[in-house]
Image 1 (cartoon, one colour):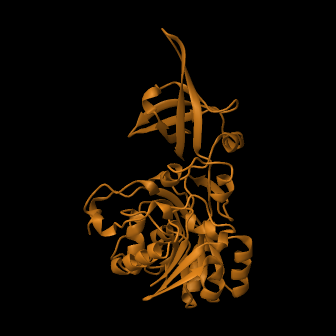
Image 2: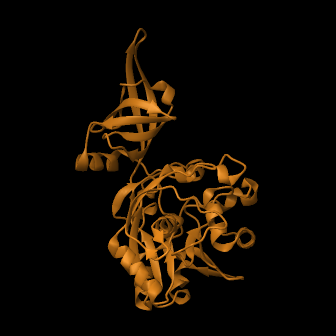
Image 3: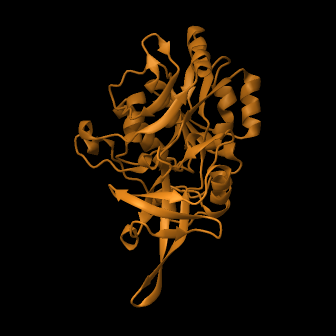
Length: 348
């Protein structure tokens, strides 16, 4: 398939820059078979059935966007430059991979000061990334990052407004537990405590898995033939307990519905022909139309960017023609798009 098969025109006014309040008041497009129903996220308890299992990604977004200063002594005296760093992932050697703006104003070995407590040395660079060693580790690093860092809002929100203190709550799920993501599993942002209670009272069950969402989720697809696209890798884990819960749900004839593309990609990475297995590692699974799903019976997700790998994924769930009709309906009905936008529940 060609990249243009996943394109559509989206009015900029439909890009959400703030979430719905309360979270569960966001709109929900229910696509079930050939039918489309306009609902709200708080309607989920009446849509889902007792015994259905939602698979939830418990990754926690770190405030990965840092602004600091580089100081340098030279023939013209003391100079300084403002440096913006977006952390991507920790590496085995103790450094952090990061995007740096502007990387050309920083030399290997120079120090960037982010706060009175936090600084980092640029050790090396490769493939447009810098690799930093921070002056702090462990809990001291986490505490300083929480104070100095801002939430790494997606580019399409950051282009419209700067991150602020509200985002430290808004861009985090209710059940976030394991720090490591630099982007939120955004379908999960719609869940609040009252909704979780209503779902539990309905008999809906929950399983937590972990996929640390990376900045690669926002990388554009630059090839015309999507088979030539190289997918980014992200670390994930499905515990033996999580696998057993999901397998039991399937054995009982109930549905397994991941909340978010990250949860779906992870459980399909861990799938075998005989069921879900415990799994840990990096996944670069690329789900496109024609993919055979072995675990997921549907998907709850937000509305995605044109020509993105996530558009390809939802097209695999529902079929390309069907997803085009769903998105045309969403645009006509003025659903809000992207990370802080409305949700869809896709049940093929």
